[in-house]
Amino acid sequence: KGDRRADALDIQTSDLWRDVSWAISDILCRPRIFAELC
Image (tube, rainbow, N blue to C red; front, side, top):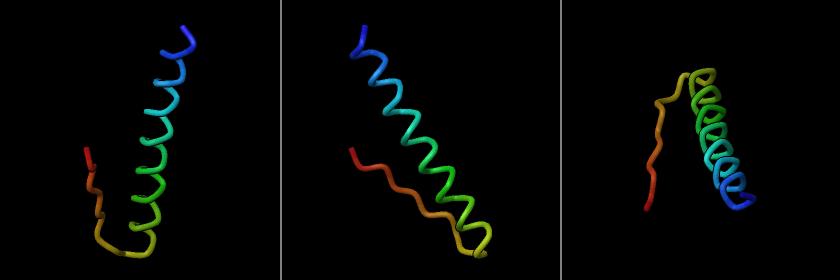
C-alpha cells in the first residue's frame, strides 16, 4: 500500500514541477520546452 502511495506522490511531483516550469516560461515570455525522457 505504501509503494502505491509513493508512486502517486512521485507522479504529482513531476506534474507540479512541469506546471511551475511552464508558468515561469509564460511569465518570462519564453517558449515552453518539456521533454520526457524514458
